[in-house]
Amino acid sequence: MAGRETRPGRCVIPLGWEEIEALALGELRSAPADGIVRRVHDDSRDARPGDLFVALNTGTRFVDEALARGAATLVPREQESALAALARLVRDRSDAQVVAVVGSTGKTTTKDALAALSAAVTPTVAADASRNNELGLPLTVLRLEPETRVLVTEMGMRGLGQVADLCRVARPTVAVVTSIGPEHLELVGSIENVARANAEALGALPEGAVAVVPADEPLLEPYLRDDLDVRRFERATVERLGEAWVFPVSRRTVQLELPFTQRHLAENVLAALVAYDALGLPLERATDGAPAIALSPWRGEVTDLRGGGLVVNDAYNANPTSMRAALLDLTERAAGRRRVVILGQMAELGVDSPRYHDEIAALLAELRIEVIVAVGDPARAYLAGAADGRFVTDAAAAARVLDVLAPGDAILVKASRAVGLEGIPALIEKHARAW
Image 1 (cartoon, helix red, strand yellow):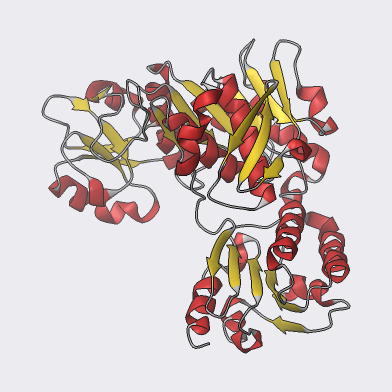
Image 2 (cartoon, rainbow, N blue to C red):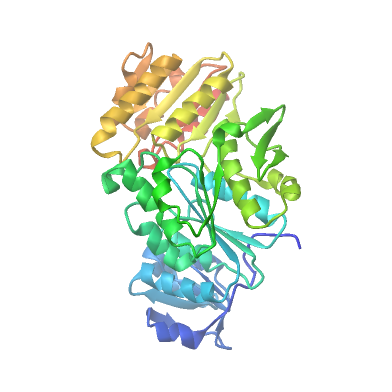
């Protein structure tokens, strides 16, 4: 059976109005005529009869709109616990295999790749973009349909215990840890605790379940229980062959053409392939889903510019591992063209933040990046030793230094999400039209 993602209009696993009422989650209005809720979501614009619209945050302003569209509504007393309770009801009625994708870098790309590969061969639901927190995860679970065979979730980590809480809702049967590295150190204190927090997904697995982990990550070893089926992937084994990438999976070789050329993104596909194989899906049909792999916004999006240049929008997030990968990719991609980087801080790195920023400065010097634009005070460190460096205070100011660009430049825009650089590449594209 061909797979596909849940789309508006599909009927998810139904819930009875009386059992929702019994949860006492908040203010419920306008029960469906037949007492059955066929969809639970948070978008009043898509509300229709049979839906339960859950008013989250400012969504309370749109309750009347949802009611007018024929939906039932819930204004929860505590929105995270309400969504979790509803999602657990749905999860209890599904026999789908549930994949939890966690890790310091590469979560969303791995999730997107696994979703595309799986959806080509079996009914699949996957998290949209980065819906990986206490709201996004249950909303993803609530999209389960009766025939769903695979649910691909992404779980973000912003402290010890968070992944464990998300796992209590999703109840994963497969866990994928993409990587362990410096992230959210202001919250967890050390890389060892980063490993501990992400390994909560491993701890949530039932006996005999599959854990997909990097082959070269000793920090995960204490969490790999003897009763788990541990499958390891080694990023260095990914090879380029012309326009295709070659992946070793379960003593077999899988060759795929991917809609991107960055090596670090292809390495994430290896993790997805190992999970795909662990789900019992046919490796010989991985080629069916590969063309559908699409990156979520602002994650290595490459746009060609007039004049022979290009801009890479990698502004969704940044940590030392992903920043290094992006800079190495830019150098390879530039192929002799002048390189311009517009870089903001890597956030939440704790007391070692200056050291991590200095390490990126050293890499910039080692690669001899021609032009560096540093955005925000923490990013000033990048300018140490720069031959051509500029400092701007914020994203708005960054938009005013586009005169540094020239036809043929290879440009990278990257920072932590809080810096807000995601709009800069579009301004660069507009600026380049005059060349």
